[in-house]
Image 1: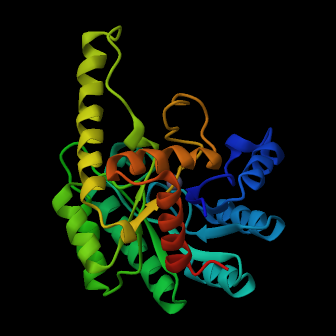
Image 2 (image 1 turned 90 degrees about the vertical axis):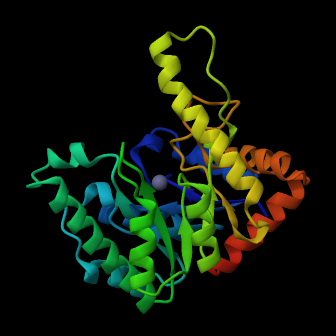
Length: 288
Ligand SMILES: [Zn+2]
């Protein structure tokens, strides 16, 4: 079964035409996990899961939002207690070293302080997942010269909890092996479909894009290595729209292009990839 394990139909990007986007999901006979990034979007994800068949929710305070509101673990525990059928994961939580300077403007005293706060709140999310036997949906993003994945791994190891997925994986092959061997799943998005830069681009853009292209080449190498039973597919809609719709707003039905690219890399049929990744999601998130 086609399953988008990470979408944000709970975000404002869908305010205008949510009903139509949902309709297209149902036509594709797929399952979707909508992922919260703060208390309000977590509640919205649950609302959607109550309204729609085959919709599920993940709840958390995203690491880029740790200065936007307080993380009160009791509020999230209440949501789990009140909606046990809808809440299938804790996420997205984790560490983000890419947006540190932006977060600094929200009133943090220093980069060091932000990192400490992200780490502490991530650990509270891990505790919440552990207490409720739920999977973690982990967000990680490297900074220019700050590697996030080793820090995430160490925190998971210190807390002895390896039930979950690193969503939109963007680390190295060595780090991928470390997570998978510990029992984690890795999530792949439309980024694996991104092609080479256009010839019309300026030199500056080319240099910038070259970095991205190098990264997507690495990702394809990682997909090639990945054991099939540890791969999840996702859109991260409204972001990261795959080719051939790159540049437009993303939506869950496009997750099939991620499956197609993985099938091509793995030399398998698309149906096989859809089935295996679907089974992986059902198992990890205990989807009914
Ligand atoms: Zn996301």
